[in-house]
Length: 305
Figure 1 (cartoon, rainbow, N blue to C red):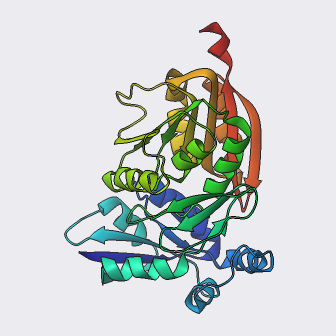
Figure 2 (cartoon, rainbow, N blue to C red; figure 1 turned 180 degrees about the horizontal axis):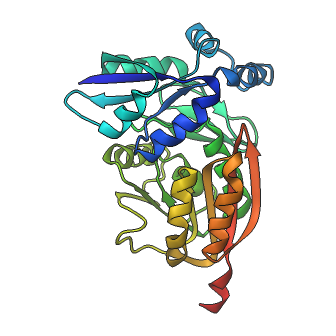
């Protein structure tokens, strides 16, 4: 299948805001190149997080920042394109096999928390003592788990999700958090996403990890007709979406009534925390990395139900 590759070139200080806007416009397939991450990337090599990566990736990280997304031939996305046109951008016609092959070269096994290593399906990795491997084939619902928003969420899940509990994963993407929940002992996970590609990707990756019996993936919207209650609701989205959804989260909670949210820039922590508290939650913990934060909260009115 043929695709259109839209690559946008913001200034360094505009990168996070651009990602925020495209995510709000419904783009879940963003490829982000941030040269500011080069120092952390090379430090990871010294810590033996990775052993080899294609030199083109290092060259990319040494260049200018960009954000990229893909449209199928014939597909239109006027909102995302309107944002792109505010910046310098290019539109290139590519084949999906070329695109996927490019990421197969770049995507290496990566340790993202003390416990979890994310490994692409086409590579081998021998886990060390205490490590648990999440195998991912991102497909078109791209998501490798190496972004701060994902590993911060997993770190909170490691701390707060108890074996035998259930989780609702809102915006499941490639299914990393859903799979992580099962590996942490969750008895049942509902993985919901607005996009078909993400649902299919979650289902495929659940099978790759032997988690398919405990993960139910489907297309849906937390605010419209979703009839699910879990011990923990996890929403790795973006600040504005987290704020919007927080008022609907409580009706999908039971038991210890925990809510983990991520995709929040540090500068938006206060306003997002305020929205969560206004929805009846108490903030239990906030953790930070790379300019992003993740929040764990507990619904205060759970004792009244």
